[in-house]
Length: 287
Image (cartoon, rainbow, N blue to C red; front, top):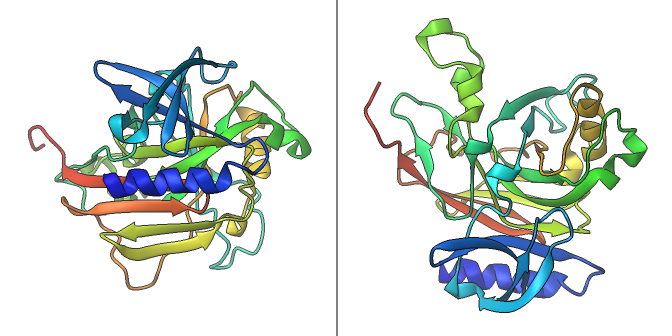
């Protein structure tokens, strides 16, 4: 944990001088939680709603003295939207006319270092590290040329997916597509939400127990962030706090995808930090 905090603070220190970037975090200390602005190894506490001009309280906390949570309160999130198969390659050379959208639930959201649950009946739970966009204002029928102005900021996400269930090939013999994407804990995000960040061409790397298993760049998305926002807003009103998982990057051939209890998965996006989560066996009775 100490190494994670130092690495995150170092990244913030490097990128802080670039224009008006702000690293918003949500953290717990004692019995309460609140938002803050991370600057180096120091968190400046905020009061008010994250998406409605919060103000600094004047209190500060050392990064190492708090526990970072998902950087937006899941109760503030109305929708978690994702898009499947959004990476160039395998015959995809440009935008897909109708991207394959899916949805998760706000209860899927967890934060850095939080556990991701593995049900005993899930034989093919896969990591899918990617850029996540946080919507900042309400919009419908958003023109693609204006779409990025609806972005509040970006964070790191891991779209855990039971990809055997996703195909719904066994009908009632296995869980449905809804559960294959939307189970509790299957949408880790964090460690911070960064505003005014140029996310159009940055490196994304996923590591399983320290081994690189996915590697790519955000510029390799088949449908750009602006295209994704514009398309989905034709059908669905986007609201402040909505999360858009933009699509995972390419997998390193020969590496393991199916999760096992005890695994640790890290997603790193250059300039945004590292999102780290351990895999645990799902508590409770077996089906």
